Length: 193
Picture 1 (spheres, rainbow, N blue to C red):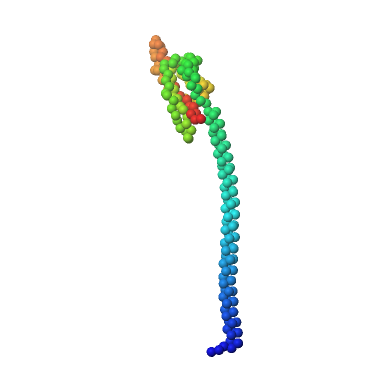
Picture 2: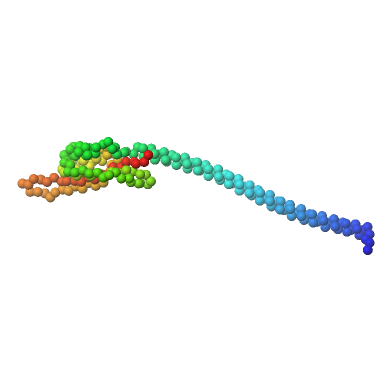
């Protein structure tokens, strides 16, 4: 069967319309996907901008924290440098004898433990425990304790125990027995560099 010119023309126009409609649908779909990709790209760029700003903000905070840490470390170093040290050159027995004489006390014995390390909040200190036993009036013992607490040679020492023993009253005709005391104190020295 042979088709006429009109049939060919209708068939050609139909094919053209079908091809045009197919191309229009493909273009419409691609255009929609393009718009969606543009929106996704815009959203991603917005997130990237926020992340960059957040990073800059965090870097600024980090710099501030590092500066504060540096200041705190400098302050700690300064405080530790000014922390009194137990001077090895001081003869503590001579100093304690001098204080006992000043307050009318007789030394009955003295002892010191070997230096030890003590850690307090990640800081290492060297401690030395001292004990001195004296005999004399209670006021003299209290004066010596006060002098140890205030004497610059014991600036880093802490009196920990004062044990005073007062004897029972004696009859008038017997010789009066004097009170005795044991004074224990600890000297601290910063042990770090």
